[in-house]
Image (cartoon, rainbow, N blue to C red; front, side, top):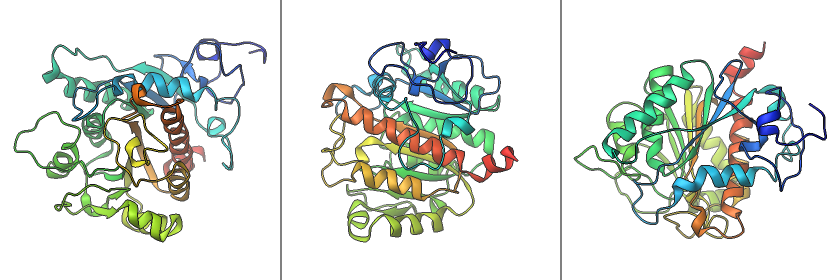
Length: 321
């Protein structure tokens, strides 16, 4: 396409490469990737899941996928700083729109999300999912476990453990990793939770690197410890934006002071280059509480770090050869 063309989200011919257009105009998709339902040749599908009925505090993350896509346009004109290569030179990435579910039948929503995700990854692409509240990670994990085998290892960034127990298998963004562990979908012993700063005495065996540890020991020590726990196992990466301190991410439903900076989070993700990533999500962006779109922008940057991490994963290196 001509370098002066616009609306790359619909006019783009190739799924590869970065082509700039005005950041303030045009049809928005995540990082100006092509909007398409055609998965032919797609390495990573970007999927929005606009669910926020499982939140326990402020709603609004149903608008998160749209906000992240919009904020990403300011970054879409060049390779993110510090990356050794442009992920879009190695990965064919398409934005496949949002997962449809009937909000009037909430009891069916988890199965609808799981089926939608599995139908995509079963055709070959991996998923980068934009939330939506954090409950969506549960059906997403189930879909990935069906594809890659259970249990998976979980790399989880959050202010909360999301492992609070409940005797009923209910829709809640604070209980889903309890059920993921209980049902054998993830292995707590080979999983890592980073940035936690709320009290839950029962860790269920998850390896916890809380926010205080990140601040006191630094990024390099956190990366070393996380890499040791994750090993070479298939890893699902889940990033709740409230892992960041509210000064960096005010636009979320359950903000907690004392969190990570954007730089710390991005550096940890980049430092884990080489882990075997099979799926990714960024969740809990609630733009109604945002200031100057800084939360959505942070989420877009973190999503790009995940794409870079995925592009560097061993399975991608094998496929490239």
